[in-house]
Image (cartoon, rainbow, N blue to C red; front, top):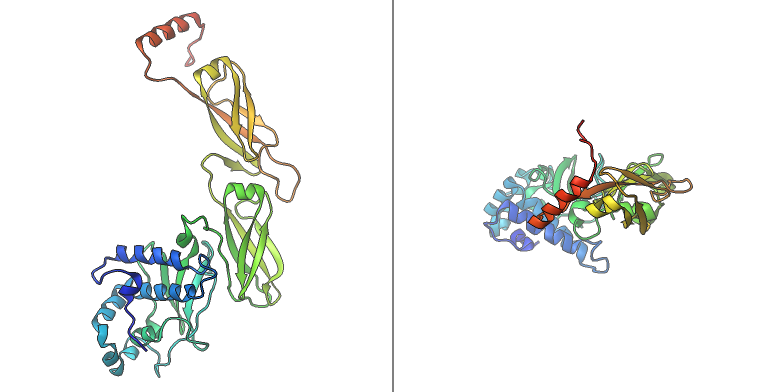
Length: 349
C-alpha cells in the first residue's frame, strides 16, 4: 500500500485554497469522466482517484489530518489512527464502487460508494487506513459539486453530472443505475433543449449495469414522464422525467409558443414582409401599415408538436417597434414636418 499524494492528483500546491482545489477537481472530473472517455480503460480509475483526492482536500478536517500524517503514514497506521479516525471495530475496510442515482430530485447523479463486501475498487486502502470508513461523512462547501454523506457502514460521494458536464454539450445526457427492487420503479431525469423537445431525441440511461437508449418523442414538456415497462430491472418500470431548459427566444404555453420580433419605424408605419424564425425554419410574416408596438400575430401550426397527439400548436409573434436614435438636425426637422402632417390624437387621453 503506497502513500497517496492527493495534492499531486489534483495538480495543486499544498497551500492551495478551497476555491483552487474545487476548480482543479471540476476540470479533472470533466476531463476523465468515463462518459467523456468511453474507450479509455484507465479513465474510470483516474476519475475515482480525483474524486478520492477531492473528498479529502475539500474537507478541512480531513485535509488537516492528511497534512499531519504526510509521509509518516506507515507510523500513523501502526499506531492505529485508522480506527481512531472512525474505522469500525476490527479495522476492516469498506470495499466496492457503485454507480447510483441519488434520490430526492435534481438531475441524474453519480454516486461513488465504498460498501462492506465486494472488491476493493472504491476509495483506496490508504484512504480507509487514514480516515476509516465511518468518517467519510461531512459536506463540502455549500454549492460545491460534491457532497458526501454517511449511510450506515457506507461512505458516499455524490457528483452532480449536469454540473460536471456543463459547457460540454452533454448536460442532461446522464444515466441512472439505482439498483432496482421488485415492484419498485426506477426514475431518471432527462434535461432537454426546446429544440430537442420539438424534434424528439434520445438519452442513454444505465440501469443495473445495462445501458438503455430511451427515445424521447416530440412534444414533451416539463414533468412529462416516459414509462418503459419492465425496463427498470427485475421486472420494475423505468420512468424518465423530462426537464426542458428555458429558451432565449421562445417561451412556451402548452403546445403554443410565443416570441418577440423587432420592427423598424418604417416597417411599423408603412408595413412590409419580414422573416421570422420558428422551430421549423424561417417564415415570412406580413406586417400591415400602422402596426402598433405590442400587436400580436398568430402563426397557425408553428408551435410545438402535441405530445402523443396530432398536429402542432401555434406561434404568437409580438411586435416591438425600435425607433431610430442619434438623429441629425436635418432628420429632426424632417420628423417635425412629418408629424405636422399626421393627425394623431393624444394617446394618453
